[in-house]
Image (tube, rainbow, N blue to C red; front, side):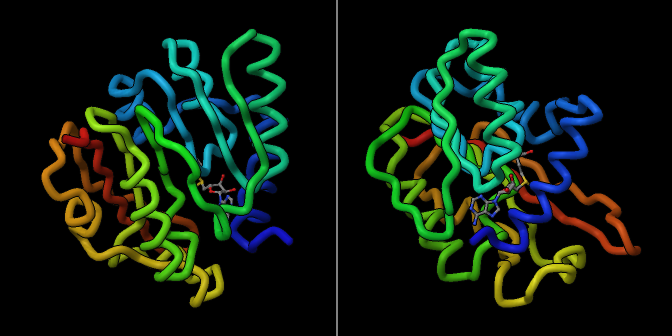
Length: 197
Ligand SMILES: C[S@@+](CC[C@H](N)C(=O)[O-])C[C@H]1O[C@@H](n2cnc3c(N)ncnc32)[C@H](O)[C@@H]1O
């Protein structure tokens, strides 16, 4: 049973597939140069970052709940002969069972209740290899956009919470970005890219 957020994004992805809109977003553009080796992209969406990372030499595993996103990523990667394994997954009930050189979760972790968001963040941090990279992007307190989803089903992170979950990691890039959103709401994002000691 897909969550409300997965249904929302699947509808958006169907529109984007029909319109041929596949640009990297600013967070994905920021992240791409830091990626290498075996990469896990959680909440990969349409797979734009997964495809570019694979083009740049990564071997990518990509997971998302959106059938439209996963189908588009699979077909495009197969057509281009790129090393991408894309699977539909319910990330609200998923445990990482191996380590990676890089783990990306861009625009994902806020779509879970607080306990699950924090547990998934801890699971990600634990499964990056020493010397590997994490790229995290979440909505933070101050965001008003998520009022459209069920209140118990999302979590706005406190400013600084991502870095606090990465003690001793080398921060490679970070940003705080604010965007106007539909219905006179706003989105405030925090992004951290960091290397594990
Ligand atoms: C804001 S989009 C980000 C997509 C992509 N990372 C990007 O930067 O464009 C959030 C993604 O998380 C996925 N997602 C949200 N909740 C999920 C869940 N419970 N299980 C699997 N995927 C989920 C959505 O389907 C969507 O692709």
